[in-house]
Amino acid sequence: MAVSTLKRCCALGLALAAAAALCSCGGRYPVPDRPTVESSERQFTAPAEGDTIAIFTTSLGEVRAVLYPDAAPMAVYNFAGLARSGYYDDTVIWRSQYGFAVQGGDAEGTGTGGATIYNNNPIPLEADASLRHYAGALCLATVAGDANSGGSQFYFVTALPDSVDEEMQSQLSANGYTAEQVSAYAEAGGLPYLDNTDTVFGQVYQGMDVVDKMACVDTVQNEDGTDSYRPTEEDTITIERVTIAQYPGPTAEEIAASAESAAAE
Image (tube, rainbow, N blue to C red; front, side, top):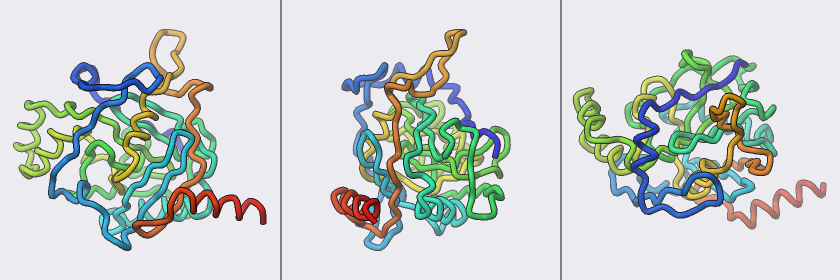
């Protein structure tokens, strides 16, 4: 499968300048101090018992996301199927773009690979009006310019809290977004221009601080001075495993014990 490339945020510079109340994470950028978003939007509603969740055990800590098979069935079933097969074990976050997104899911670690449970056929766009690209959204990465080219690669939205300014909020309202959605974007931040081009299939509900740490590691600079957005070797971020479970799911200790038991067999 071809390279899964995320579109760049044209307002990234403004978003970076707007970050406030920040603390250091050891990389080039500070970790944003994210607000607790009070919203009736489903992505900011706590998971219910029995909801399908994905637990990412990484070298920087644990991230938990609720999945939405009702809204994006092909994306969720593909992700869950690959995770259960061990496809994501010991893969890396190969793209780290502060204020935008972090991307992984390529077994080759280069951003050029991918797979699906559908005989490696690509996954079509599953844009759902109830799911938006708020900060913390778990999304299906695609080949640039082809919304129907989803595979194994995914990304977490790491847009900063002040990334959706008043002008953009007005544009969202004019384009039919509900007042609650506009308010959620204003508070949480996000990438609304991807809402109709990329599939959202999950949302981080625990461990967003870990995702933010992924986004502020040192990255390799190209010879021409541009950023490759690839973490340096010293800052390699490893996804040790992805566990699919039903909320609330096993504890980190239980996951580790299960992995040790499987390795000993």
